[in-house]
Every structure is written in structure tokens, then in C-alpha cells.
Length: 442
Image (tube, one colour):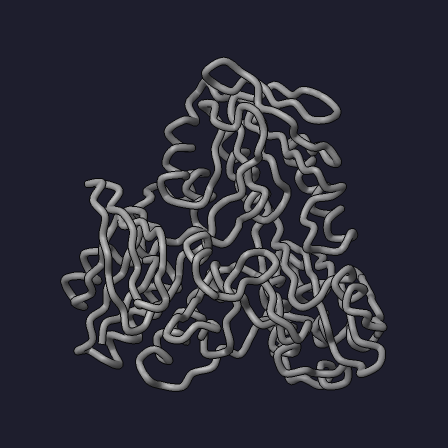
């Protein structure tokens, strides 16, 4: 059996390893257009900030390990250009040698990931303008970030933009955050977004909201950027306005695509075309709360979907159980996290919901170090079920979000959440966990 996998990162190699372990005699060919296999994209901002001193630390497994230890034909610089689903052949070009290649498959996994969205404006190719998605992207930023780079503008106020901004501040740069939206962290409700903005400003970041970038200006190197409301001098610009799935190679196939360009898959990671699977940032994820296919590209999903795809390709039966929309980030002294629906999503789904937001403590109030923890909870008024939680604080955020994610996955009501037997000791929690305090008030 000939298995071809397009993409050598999280989803692709999670699948490859399951196939190797389950069907050791099968032939596995992985076609990776870059130079790296299995690296931690989420760690890239921390390499920029110097928290991770060497980019090699972000590589989970070298390509040679997959090739020599596991017998995988793990290729690099192999850019797939087209898929012939009738002949079951993929074609492309070796970007190092310039030679064309053709590989036939019995089963194909598309794990091509996603690429950063470029701003389609004048000057976006000037020296000193960057995006961040790969190790070479991060290395280019670090190499370019010399002593003469004093002011850096980050375009985009989402997770990556905020993490990059924080790490630039730790490197001693003067940082500006620009976003066309009217607030930072749009995945969060307004109350959390305002707290993020306050923390950014307290750390010296200039926050510019509600302005659309029109051009990057300079001769050979960027010197400033112009928005619809003004011009800002900048020695470097990093664009972090989101990503788009790498699915252009399926344009000549019958594969069904989501509105955002991701490939629709079922719970076995099968597409609508026989013998073709998809997983990771190029595929959809079923949202258990929205009860529909969504696009939420995260490393956690990519690894789970890759494992699921690999087992099903190898002849086993494994289902991807879906997502509830859980994420967390560090922003200076705070952790900021969410799971489930925010208010905007609840309104879009027509849910009659209740919401509460309040300050609590992650540990016993009398125990030293109990900084405040802000909790925001949403419930479905009709079923009394939990539908969303957001939290921001210096301590205890991850614990609450993971408990809430488990409750959402299990469909717990407010009463059931209140009755959970959660751990307590003064250094770790209060007698009533903040989540349970919220549930009692709903």
C-alpha cells in the first residue's frame, strides 16, 4: 500500500507515525515543501523574544529520524502543485533542483497547513517587513532586528500579534500595535479585550485601533506605514492578521471546501473524494457547540486530527470528537483564555443566553499571593447548560479553562458544574472554585 502525505508538520507526521506503527510494511512518502519537519509553530514568538535561545529547540523530530529510524520517505523542498484524484497521482516540483516529480498513491492525506495572510498593499515587499509562520520567518525577524531597529509595528491584534508584541517589548523595542478592528483580542468579549488593551498600554505598547493600513513606505527598506488616518514611522513591520488554509492544490479536484477555504472532512478525516483524507490547519473541525463544521486552526487540533487520519488510513476506526473552542495565551503578567462561545457567537446562533462577569480569586482569599481572577461565563437559558467561559488573571486561568472545556465537552448544566468535586487547598483554590461561584450566580 502506497501512502502519500502532503505536509511534514503536526498533522502529517502524527498520521505518518500511526501508520508506521499499525502497518509497518506499507510505503509512506511525505512531501514537505519547506526544510523542517515537526516543529513548534506556537513557540516562534518566544524565539523572537529570546526565551527560546535556539530555533533548533522548536524541532520535535528531525527529518532524518523519520527517514532512518522509521523508514519514511521524508522529502524536503518538494512543493506539490496538483492532485489528479482519478489517476491517484500528485505532481509538483523539487524547488532545490527545479526538477518535476510525480508520485502515485493508494491513499492520500492532505496536511498542507496554512499560510500567513499578506496585506495586499503597496510596499509589502520592502526590506524590514515580515510575517511569522515558519522557523525561517522567525530567523529572518531575529536577524533583521539589530540595534538600529528601535520601533517595531505589529499589524494585527490577535493571539500571534499580541504574543509577538510582548516578546518585542522584552527585547527592548518600542512597539506599536495596529488593528483595523475597534479592540484587541476579538475572540474575547469586550470586557476581556479592554483588560488586554490596558495591560498592553501599561507595558508601553502604543495601541492604534480602528485604522486600516494602506501602504508601507520607504526606498529599499521600510521607514513608515500609512493608514487611512495617519502615518507612523517604523524601523520594522510584522504582519500578523491571520492565516489561510493551503488548499490551492485542490482547485482541479472535486474536494468540497469551507467558506474560508479549508477542506471539509468527516469525523474519520475523510474528504468527499475517495481515498483522500485531510487534517490540521487545511481542514475543518467540527464544533460541538455550534453543531457544524468550523475552521479553528490550532496545533492541538492538528495533532488529534493527524492521529485520527493515520489510524483510519491504516484500517482502524477512529473518530475525531470535535472541538469546543479552547485556547489560551500568555500576555506579559497575565494568562488570557477562553472556551466555548463568546457573546457574538451566541447571538449569531440565536441562543437565548445569560452572562455573568466578576472578579474572584484563584486561591483562598486569606492566603498570600491571591491576585484577582476575572471570570466571564455564558449559559443557555433554555437548557441551563454552560456554553462559554473566558478568564484573565495572573494565576489559575489554565485550571479553570480546562475544567470549563471538560464541562462543555460533557454538556454540563449549571447545577452539575456546581456539584463537581474539584480540588481544594488554600494555596491552590478557594472552597468554592471561581467557576462554581459563577455557576451559583447564574
